[in-house]
Image (cartoon, rainbow, N blue to C red; front, side):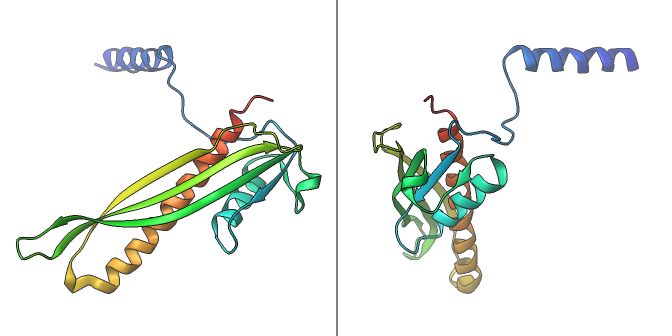
Length: 163
């Protein structure tokens, strides 16, 4: 029985690697040495992007665009909330939460390295009137999770840029 299991395990690993599957992993290099992040005033996505770049890459985040080889412009970052379904009595049963980020990457002269790209993330929030406070906390947690996901997508897209 053990030889059959070993054969099946090896066959599965070979089949997975043959199709090109690999884990996403961490981005360790970006195609530029310095970057400046420009975002709407007071929006926490700027801090999250800068932190993610500092922690996971060798690229240095600078505080002035003149010192940067690349400039990441976050044009907008918006939370959205829509009613997804209602009960028979007309009460909300589910909300659809959305997070929409528009960004583009510029070189040091201001020429676009990437066009304006929009990242749209959605989550479903089941809702009960009896759990209003808990659902408000869950909603904030889902928005923060979508923002972190958007930051990772932005970094992966920047890593794919060819200079």
